[in-house]
Length: 234
Length: 212
Image 1 (cartoon, rainbow over the protein chains, first blue to last red):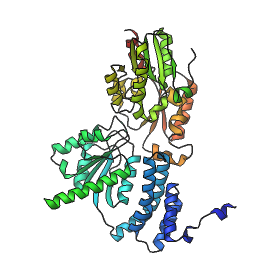
Image 2 (image 1 turned 60 degrees about the vertical axis):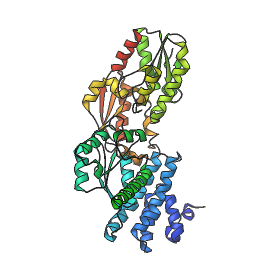
Image 3 (image 1 turned 90 degrees about the horizontal axis):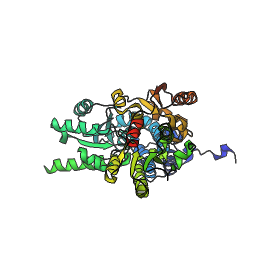
Image 4 (image 1 turned 120 degrees about the horizontal axis):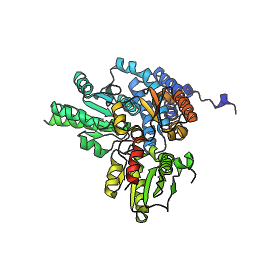
């Protein structure tokens, strides 16, 4: 059989088949195919938010699950993320135009002394996919940057990331400073990064340690909902 | 005894035991350096067990591996010392060593103790990617392949885009290794710096243990 005969024509697939194929393409990190799939669904009249949640986030959830289960490894997750990013780039301006729902705002950054941003970028992307507005502070952030950005952006969540055992203690510096300024309870503080664990998260006074991007999204949704409930009850 | 090859030290570990009264349980990445110090100083009373260096790619497994080795060998020695620094275990290896009553090398990792823990900390280099003699030899096994760059070189800048310089912390004078390190810097798209360290705090620590 020739390669040509092997080629799948995405536009020939019905919606259900196409979304299923996009899951596979995302899993395989095929950026161009994902971009094509997104454009086809837009042409068929799908709302950008629906494409984001059903096709892209749905596909990345499968990738995240297999990463957690040790079936996929970091390089494959990065390829998948890169493919999703391609799709997101098309959808983002449209989402802004159509006023897609926002369930909370997060400022996120890698802590001072640390330049690793792969985990942070994955979390940012998945949070955006889940309907959060994300302000990415980048890498190597001192305490002032977190606190000033959280206030300026009127954020609900402050996210901190670190890859090194030598830099992760800086998260406590940020939280201690928030306590000292009396603003700790104004925000949900989420922390994550390869060397962290739940015990560390508790010890430094974070609201939650997130072992991966999918957990970060679930934690964020859960804690935002609890905050709303508490405020409603109060 | 011949120095074990780097692949053995990476994947399976190695040991030279049954001769001394003091045992060093070390990372395989340090075997060559420890054997050299032993030979130069006549520390024949120090035996050596090296755990697979590749444990560094899963540092959460190091404390358990060290504990197993200590328990396996404890009966045969007057003293056991652990030739690891914290090595990405976030204090867990230190806690395990304290529980076992054995000493370990001070510092966050071998990059720091080769240069000297205080001198390394004072540099405060966030954008440096470090290699040692061992890692230059085993670059593909520790860096290139685990990051998938052999299959997906396009991911390089996602991993290394925020780094600026590959710093080769050189334990020995070896022109071949230096050239390899320089090439590795090019492959990662980073500037290159060679920084001779000798054995740094590793030598000082072993000297103290050997003299007891």
